[in-house]
Length: 363
Image (cartoon, rainbow, N blue to C red):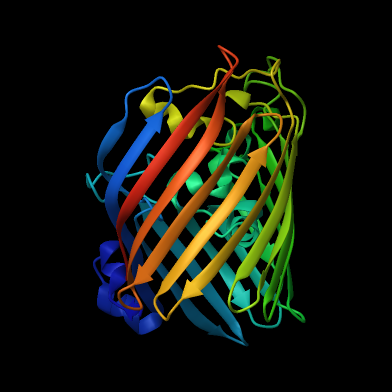
């Protein structure tokens, strides 16, 4: 259960006045547990890590009724390592920092730093592990969190979300520079156009998102910068909940990849000494797909299983996981992921394994 608090006191010295004017909520996740990781040809790593099921975070969000059915809204969200107490994303509010307006009849518009629609909408629909569970995540093969897309988040962005009509909702966004402040030369900024539509009605959920990034083509001084052209990323998929089991399926297609060395999960294995070594000579496009299931067991437990594969970047694997709810806000979890990744400098496929078990609390 979320608690309405004097959370604005974290940002200003007049918490009482802030609460009198608007509804402000402090929320978050603290997640930590045991983690074992092993990449073929490297030493194993064993320890206590943060964010094994979902990244530890805290945030402040609020709204103010400004009349005529219109609300002013904002979200500020920080990511952190619960095992060390250190900050993630090299910034205070690296997960989200935006302000906007919302109307039940007209929709919502926001300005600031936020996730792209593939990250926010598609990942949780196409695969039961969604954005979570370490290397089990569908981000190990799908490209919504690629370096060309600012690792899934867009700075300097404006997004519009329509109201829901018969289960459908549409979204459109534009970023003037997806990673960092804009410069005076527009062509020195990586600009993003983001489109999406999702559907949720009863047991069926479906999604389609499409991102186009016009990458940096000149320096601020006008010097030409080489790239592979406009990066384009498509994600589509659906899941259906039969009650006793839910089934998931998804497909992704990426074109004109400009950062193959950091593509879909390669960077995730750098902690064990793995670097992909991929260049544009290896691939500039990718196709990926995933299939998965989840099923409740009793009233508190749930099990997950999924398979995913990316064809050009040569990543594939399966994952098994389970959660057990101790309460509405606290659960235990465990999962195992077995992936195969390509080491492009030696042109070999390497086994990458992860086992994790931990505790997550949401407040």
